[in-house]
Image (cartoon, rainbow, N blue to C red; front, side, top):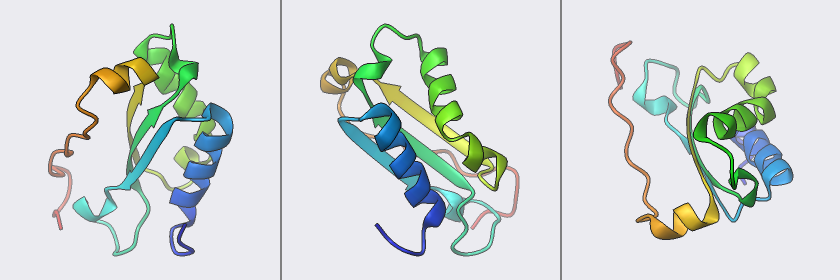
Length: 108
């Protein structure tokens, strides 16, 4: 973990503690938006957990949002969530699709 990414680090620790994921990626996509360099405002989360078994996608997203409630209320402007069960992850190509370019600002 890096000391210059406190929001990302907090998100990682909370998701690990709450979901015990078998796979976790937190991708800072802030650079794709009209924000200051080094900002931690836009993230994509890829999380694979047994806790998602028998839960529809909406419930999975709500669970992740609840875990990251503090961050979402304190500076995280956008959160893209990819929440899968271990079997869904195993059956997938295990890749993360790139996010589209920002349309709401001046870009990079």
